[in-house]
Length: 95
Image (cartoon, rainbow, N blue to C red; front, side, top):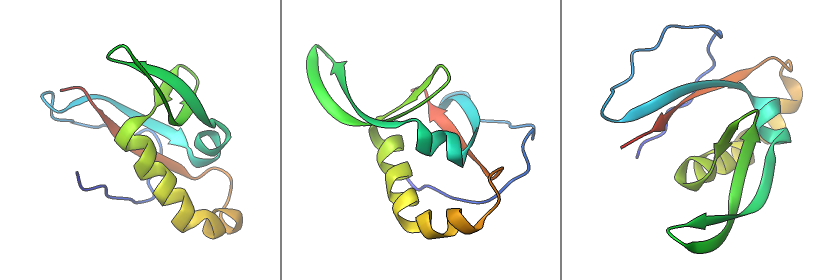
């Protein structure tokens, strides 16, 4: 898995690989940060406690949440300097 990061204007038209991507989300960085929590989830019948981001009906966890946590660790100081409307886009795997 190789994450790529960039700033984009919201509302683009995406053409994801249907075999690899179940949904493309465009979410404000501030909403992601506000939705962070360590939550207890059940995975294959086993309870786990893991980093998650909840924005609206979208629960982001697992490798995607770990990638976001690393991103926020790296860009945290920059976020304070940027305008509040910055957004991040990501593709949610479905395979």
